[in-house]
Length: 274
Image 1: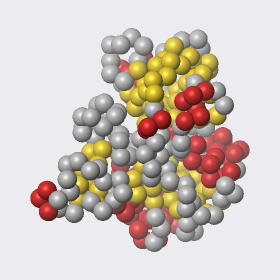
Image 2: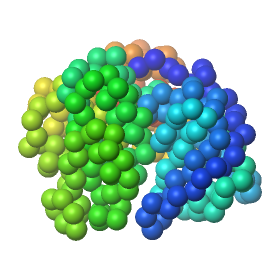
Image 3: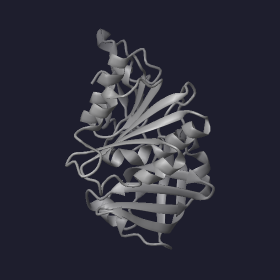
């Protein structure tokens, strides 16, 4: 997964559309042609709340096409609450695109995408790219309720085969989306984003199937550019994503810590040691 944040910059964008997809779930479409052209599936931005009273927050780039880049997020605290109050015409400064996204170079002809909750924000670009490559794409999408399966039909209309589960059984099968993945026909590659327990489950299932999986890890970033080392995850030292500092030889361990914001957020499941 080649580093892409060499294309990162500060973008002064303007909100051109605000959608409330469900209670507490907002999508902001931005006039950001340069950001859109530079973004690859799985990358993110650091969005700077306009008041300056809170730190920037990491948000996945949901759409990137033409002059439009959009961010989809759940309102979870002060920073996202402020961003959710933006309206068309308001300015929003973002830094990005940042991080390493999904590697689509060996995607194969049959891909499974697994999304849990807000993880759906990281996989629309991936799904579209795979479909454009002629791959069969199955989206395994899980949420707490039917209302929180936001934009599910957008994926179906794009050409994805949709498999959904909800915690309360309000639509689809009741239970975890990993259960549906475990019963499914074996894909050639798995791409996933969602809460850590779900990602651990995806990694286990991929290993049992003998399929490689790419996991976009969710984390609260301090700086977003790799300077603070506050968002690390253990990976095998032989990984191409293992950082060169600190040296892997120290302590003789075959495991080193990689920064989710810098070396990630997407990692190969079989290279993680979490």
